[in-house]
Image 1: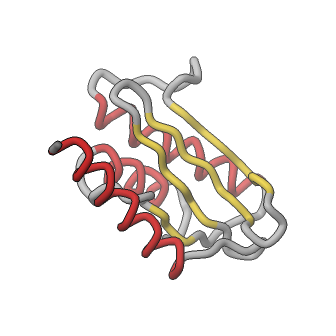
Image 2: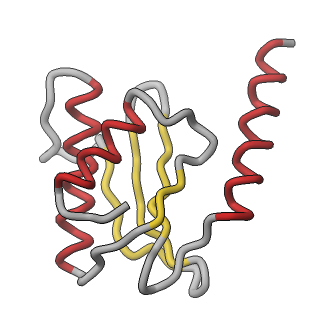
Length: 117
């Protein structure tokens, strides 16, 4: 039963956040997905329904010894790709996850890479 409550809480938090957070072409939404093994991030223009840039820990050029270092590298990689496309400001969508650990490391990596969250 605890698993169902946890999943329902995440769905509820995610719905509430998406009501407040929406990406545009000038300020896309940085969406984070975290699995047990990998972490993914993408910049989304919700009005046009397109992904502008993406990065994940599955890519071969991402290096790090710990999951925190890998997440930070994914954030920096996404920031580099965004800046190449002329995107400097984004709105952060933590996708129902708590803002700590790997999610926070990804956000810090994106900030250090030059994005304004």
